[in-house]
Image (cartoon, rainbow, N blue to C red):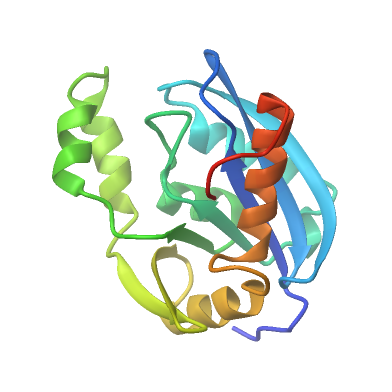
Length: 190
């Protein structure tokens, strides 16, 4: 994959869990420097619609022809509404990079899923995300999962996008916008 400094990244994060419908925000960035657009949609809290909603968000935007990679803040949105990144990659024909500050406790996640309907389907979507790899981004360790892209290329994109903090700028801005709109002021860590 040829990675240009201004590669178009669509980063998506969710807002605070304040209702049954949870806002998700996508930002289109050129590398880690310029924001080209903002997208908004909603998913169901603890639902099963995140993959479908994000697929529609990606493919329906006028930015779709320029987007080269989707970046997600974890695979669970709106509580335990799991994004199947393998399916998202196949349906959008775009690589997907999942970013985590630290490796999640899979045992704890599996136990929590038992309290929800379709626990096995949710768990399978989590397993579809594949291996978690720890990478160094400008001296900070982050964990990532990938679909449709090699770890080496994903690492290059992570480094290009990480310009002002410990996480990629597109994810940081998506988080600030989502929490700011829903809570009246941005809060928490992306």
